[in-house]
Length: 122
Image 1 (cartoon, rainbow, N blue to C red):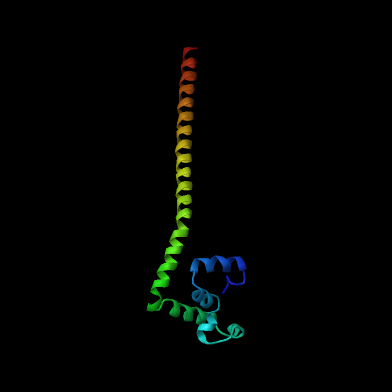
Image 2 (image 1 turned 180 degrees about the vertical axis):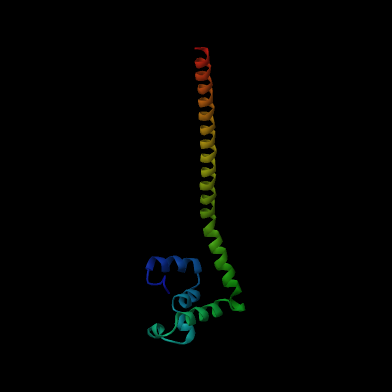
């Protein structure tokens, strides 16, 4: 119900749900209670949520739930791939930075040794 006033959100959610009846009840759960759309402001939101949850999780809608879950998983594949790629990039950056720091440290140590050696010779 919070998402429904924003048309773009409604389109995205409708595409994910992919079932006209599920969409209808998701966006207007008052219909599950046999009420008009105008009556929904007078009822506690929790009642709507419970009515939709009871309807949606009923045993006879198991197939629809599985289809929705599969659509969501399919949509998440590129997101998860991008997340993994970004994590790998971050790891490689850290490795590179550690290597650079180690090389700088080694150069500074060599430079310090040379300076100390020159100082001893004087």
